[in-house]
Image 1: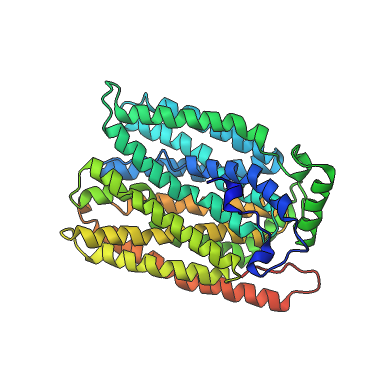
Image 2: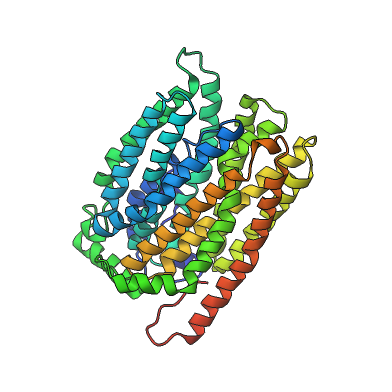
Length: 440
């Protein structure tokens, strides 16, 4: 089903909101060009996650996210100084090359080295997609688009399961996992070659829009309090780091990503620990992607229907907490309950899309939006360093300490979400004329 068939470009009035007479045909035209590229970029980064047994399982993931965190600030500088679409495209290209090179790895050390380099390239994805979305869509229109491209995560889990299953059935003398890396890397390279050409850096550079359409988009964004300054303003960076909002978003990202990073990347390993073989584990992991997509679509639909973002986050945390309890206390001899727990914990994946949405909506201007995106993405990387290290080989096969940690951090996300609601509500009540209206 194509983007136009999904009718994602329907103007916001269909959900009871209006946005200064948005031209639905123009929004659909933008959707057809922009959204598939953003979805593809987010989808591809979840195809290459490798399940490794024992302690290697923790350290390959940790190495990836060390590279991710270290590169986050340099990548943010590149996004500030160069066209966002070009920076995105070049990183996807390098990422594809490195994935192909992964097929030549022999031993844990070489795998860790290439995973670290992959983390460096992937660090740009979320900040770039947040900036691009905010440059094309108003704060009313944006949530649906965030939700759609974020569904690439769940789609990556599903297709990654198929690829893993197929690779394990490969009759080639070339190891199945090597074939998998070469295929995924080649697809990345092909997509990367398209991105700088097909993805304009903003409406003004869009060759698929005429002058009146470009002007209409710019007027809508200006009316929506979206500024388009492209130069770096250092004093705004100082304001960003003194703002409690960014630290609450960082804490919430940590609490959400520690469990979601483990579940999205390593659920096949956990399923294997329930007594299933590797091929069965690959297939049984695919419903995790379905749950992730369902949770993202459900929360996105709620926001489009004017539900507060904070309430949507709470609604996603509750089933994730139930899943954590099932995973922790059902026991290794009860695979049905543990499997249900893994699937329910995947609800924790969806709130990150809402955090991205908050960053895009509640930071005005290129400088703070790029910096806030980089900070939140760095928190995402740090959480993914912490998460795998909670799963120690000595705790196999139950991994009980890690499962309890998972429950604690999910529960901790609840009061942090409420604190953000209080902060945004207070700022909206006290803002002056012309001040930024914070999206709850």
